[in-house]
Amino acid sequence: MRKLLCLLYILSAFSCASKMKIKGEATQQFAPLKKNETVAIIEEYKKIPDSVEYQNIGEFQLKDGGLTVDCSYEHVLDLAKNKARKLGGNAIRIIQHKMPGAFSSCHQIKFEILKMKDVFAFQKMLIWSKENKIGWKYFKGAPKIERPSFLCATLNVDYKDYKIGGKGRIEVLPVIVFDCSYIQPNYQNKHQLEYNQLKFDLLELYARKMREAFNAANIDSQLKWQKFAEEIYNEIFNDFETEIYYLETETNFGLEYTETLRWKYRLKEELAETAALSTDSI
Image 1 (spheres, rainbow, N blue to C red):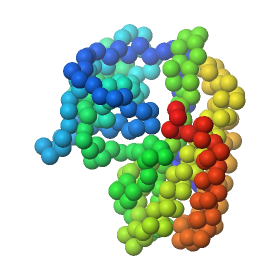
Image 2 (tube, one colour; image 1 turned 30 degrees about the vertical axis):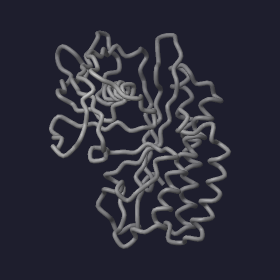
Image 3 (cartoon, one colour; image 1 turned 135 degrees about the horizontal axis):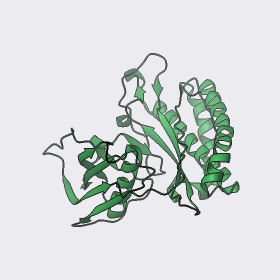
Image 4 (cartoon, rainbow, N blue to C red; image 1 turned 90 degrees about the vertical axis):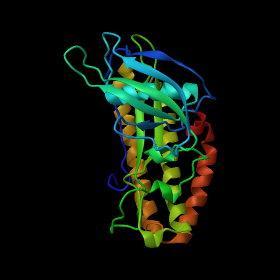
């Protein structure tokens, strides 16, 4: 069911800790954001309308500190987002993006951390949370005739905080991707919304199963990550694909509301039983 609910699996292959250096000072800060709160990225070519209210927390730079192993653009943005969360910022505006070149193989950026009153206009994804309920505004993709609606989601799995000879941790985040999620106008109703929330909650359940499996396998080193992560992931993902198949067929893509309610009741119990592994508690 990869076409029905796409899932992104990131396997890092780095043997050393990143040496990227961050420079800059905050002129103010707010209460830190949780790891499951989304930080929006505003690229260089994007303008912030005058009507958008925000406060500037500070200007920073992420530069190659020498012997850097992991400095892909995705990882550099991840470091910037972590900095923003610590300072209470919910958006990053890229001022300058220096591409890899002759003197450095790293992506390097200059950026501002912002606290926006409403960040949705620049938000591209939503991390699962008990408080983050699905709304039709998240379905930004053009509708297609294959099905009434489509929830485009990914399960980001990554190995974090790795150090030479040290221990790291595994991060599992279930997220919705807005641009490829869609709803046909005639089906924009309460029942179809509940059905898509059910899918998102099911993804969260399997994120919890994956966290539990990684914890049981005691994967805390780069070697263990490379040896066992893919096998664990594939086993759990196969179970998830089977669940998605039964959910879609038994509910007729959410059109059989009685069946949707049955699934909803069962999933509510399973989420309650696995609350200790919730994305809200990471």
